[in-house]
Length: 378
Image (cartoon, rainbow, N blue to C red; front, top):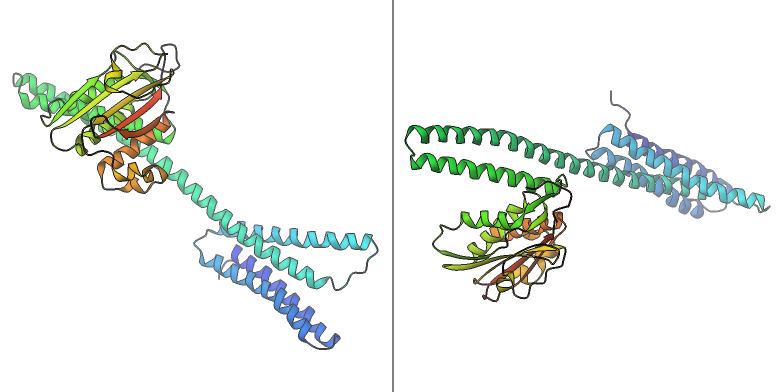
């Protein structure tokens, strides 16, 4: 035996209105001369009632839970009550004014049908919006859970690998292979921490810390120092604390990798960090970051190359206008999307431009974190 559901209740409202309309206008046909008027009225209020019945059947065909269907039914009932109540209030005013009521049932039926139809439609979209919001929350929780799970499990595995690599190195009297394993394990641990920090920043779960952008940049540049096809020029202050988390490493890494990948053969990459007047930076950032203005409370990371220049989607602004380029197979574009997202999450920004070297320039500005600011040093 089938269970009476909310969609059936919506259709029942339509059936009730249709039956009332048929009975009312059927009696009118014998009471007035000609059937054209009653039939035209029946086509109006009866047609609305049929639309309510069809809406109920469409709701039944949707993949809604019984609870969601009953929520739609409550919306439909509320719409009916409000519409009929509003019309009844106008009748009450007319009675209070001493005016005659001329055939009030016909407009009452129209109001009831329109209220049911409007309420059911609004209820369906309200339920669908709530379901989409719930799925979005579940997706965020799932991403957060996977992030923490991978952080825990992979960290343990890589720590074990690193421990065995140390033992192997000790037993083999400094074997280079063991040193490579240990170095790669360390690199993997660093990437896990950076990836976890990226996820936390994007999800809004990150606590702001004082991260030394200059030290982070030095670490990233050290990882590409052995690439003979790349000439890296850097101008970094002794320290450049920013208000962010370890995801800053991904900002630097993606900009540097983007410059290398799209700069062509024998590319020259220049990297500079500039600290605003509120900071206490040393170094000659102006030489490599000519024309880049840095606010007093900001720190700027400037990465430029002598490659082919800005990608077309960056130059024409479409990259920043929508998310289509996020799925682009071009790794540089995807990396830049991540950089832009992280910079925004940290309260900063990403600005593209042309480099004096002839290639592209990207400037990331981040909030400066003075020594007395909230957050721990990272």
